[in-house]
Amino acid sequence: MTPIPLLPGLSGLCTDRDGLILDLWGVLHDGNTAYPGVAEALARIQAAGLATVLLTNAPRLSGPIIETMAGMGLPRELYGDILSSGDAVHQALRDRTDPAFAALGRRCWHLGPARDRSIFEGLDLTPVETPDEADFVLNTGPWSFDETVADYEERLARCRTRDLPMVCANPDHEVIREGRKVICAGALAARYAEMGGTVIDRGKPDPAVYELALERLGVSDRRRVLVVGDGLHTDIRGAAAAAIDAVFVTGGLYAEPLGLSRHGEMPDPDRVTALCAAEGVAPIAAIPALVW
Image (cartoon, rainbow, N blue to C red; front, side, top):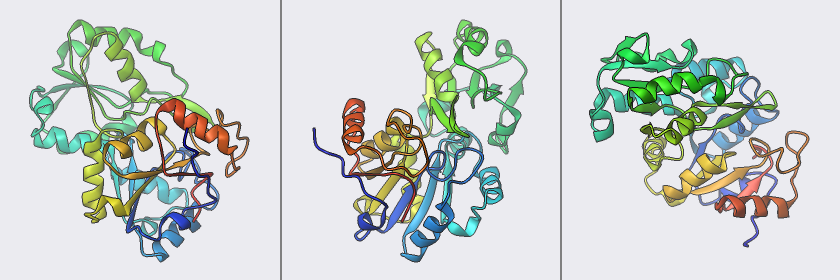
């Protein structure tokens, strides 16, 4: 088991880098509040001359996300670009160049809350009220942060009865929101797949979304890019699939398994290495939080 280096911040890893692909939930904020020191870290990254793209599995267009982050004290001028899984799904549904998306019909049932409906803007789709009327289902996640996968069993069964393909606009199974785990669209999609349903994902860990991020970053040599994220199954595994080095932020999704009680706390290096080995990933380093 190769030890994962545990560092206090990013600066020592960026001397030969041109750009960073940064996760949002668990790295910049907890879904409601920016983590302490994040604005300063982004400013220092910018001052070091590094290009940045924020890559998130949020299942909506990035415009509303920008507004939400500004309300957290993370204004638009602190980062270079932003790409959401909602953006990627919107593009795929618009262009229909991917065979899986080209085969979808136009009548869409939305499984998800109204806050995600920006994903439909400008698309040639006919929204329908029930799965019985649909050609496919677009899954953006639960209506309430208090719900579980079990709460959606009947809805998923109705979709499965009609053999509807499901487009999942957020492959995350769960995130940390205000210190507690909440389920995401990926958890519902995983259950649908268990039921025998067809699931089409867009977002991390799909290597294709990293290709889009590299285009927006404007850095052609992926060896000069770092992915920074707290999701071992999404950020770190996706970066590996795209042949990009990754840094694991320990204070997000895996804070509890690592025995961390406060944001920015340094974890036990042996526990970090054991966790990464158990999950089959190998980031080049780990940091406790987004710190320069």
